[in-house]
Length: 379
Image 1 (cartoon, rainbow, N blue to C red):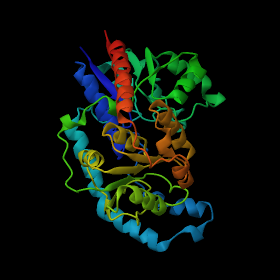
Image 2: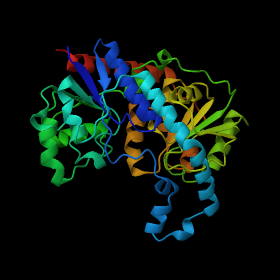
Image 3: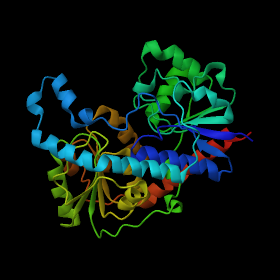
């Protein structure tokens, strides 16, 4: 029997990207299949970009030189010089230890290994986001170079809209899939608008897999509020949000997790900042937190997974759709806000989420998701 190949954003130095790829890998493995992650890394990929991460080019381009805070930039440079190599090594070592991979391939060499696989699963994560619409690889658009089964598992299109100039190519590519599932409603609409087919809506793979089996470490940090912020600051300031959280959960330490290879902001509100955690340590920080504050989709999911009171927020359009869907799917809209005013309006800190109800929804979605994979992979 040939292998199952998984094609996703496994190579990103991002906790959610790495953990979702490992979760799907292990789920397929537990279903009894020989599986590996296709080690496709685009030629254009850069682990990090010093100028881009510091926001220098963006502000010069917008002629906003007065927005450049030199002290802030120097602090970031110091952090990046100290931690970027360390965090990249952490991710690389973790990936190598936890899964099997194909040889490394790029756009030119991927076709040489395609027919090692009886089926290729694309997903999960935002592999169908607008920046990938003209990339044939994540739509498995290989022409006659691949003869196996094409499956999508929980990809996210980010938005439902499709440019007319991309429509025919996407229609042909999606029409050749044997089984299609997506992560949310807007991705369902995206598929239906192109091929008039109703995709299955399945759970993010991180909800299917028990990460304890990977030998996760336990935290010894005591009680703390955990912040994991990847994007822009909430309207009203992080500092004021932390004050509100502390008024409910006590004057306990605030710990912040940052990824220095990404475009990150400093955390002056935190008592301690972690810049080079490995993914097991990241999970442990969530599992042992007293409260979680995040703008990360997977940050919110792991809060649900480990029954942590949390507050999630979004400020950017590309983050909005997944959080709106998450709020509806697990009945947690109360804990997802756009600005600081909504925290009081929704009384988001007054009532702990109903984790019994959330667990039931997750279990129901888990069954649907595993049934989809069993059916899609059955030979």
